[in-house]
Image 1: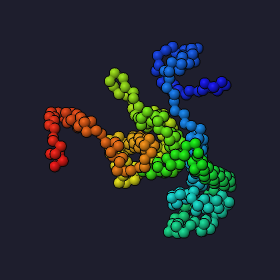
Image 2: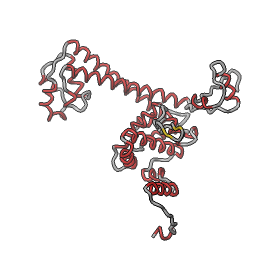
Image 3: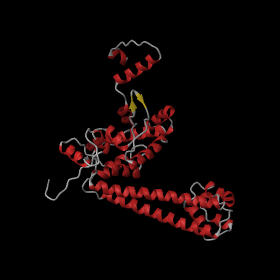
Image 4: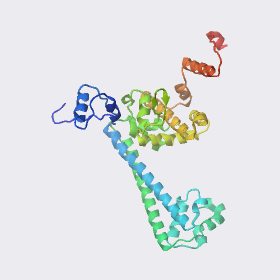
Length: 347
């Protein structure tokens, strides 16, 4: 170790707790230092500096998106309190047309025909519905608050645009790890994963998969694998662990997108999982599969191929055979196995 340089090792508190030893407040630090000196502690994953910088930007963008959603909900609640039913007619009440009409209401406009005239041509068939939806009553105080909320919404939207541009700039100008930009492009090809979700995933796990011994370790670290709470042969709660919240959120978002993409492997698996697990657990299962795919792609630095995904999750022949035999035996059937010659099986 260089003089004046302090090396910090981040360890998992859950792992340290499992190592036998005295656990008192007085001797805890000495005990952890002794474990480290004997090599009994496993260092937790810390991404390199460029990935941490990218993580700062993506997490800031996520906080801005949450702020925008909260502001949009408050705008809608305020409009509803004044009997403005714009959200029931327009799919996006805070789109260009919606904000234009709401801004006019905030400025005191009460002429319904003038308000409807602010809508785009796409809303022409809904003119009569808009007249009824905009025929409400807003007090002067409500108009003021509505204007303030619209200002905040637009400011937040502008901030999201700026930080997204900065993230793209950081990715393209990355010199220490040039594979970052290529990794995001590769992950963008996965069903359900867009550019923004790919940016979040890379910012959370990096591009070097050698930090994780296997895809199972990565899934456990992300919190998208079943928990293990078993005592005396009785399994209790199997809920997932906390894991990395930002990564888990991005994977869940990608899983929802993949579940709606018909004709894909992930959509088919989601339908099967949903039948016996329910919708929410099925989404977590698909998020786990997406993370396994990401691990394999970044480890081998290969592009996404839909036809290779089924092969990745296919059980070995012996494992599948044992599973089917166990199912038959549960039904009270005695199974006798006779090996079929390769030539006969092919025929």
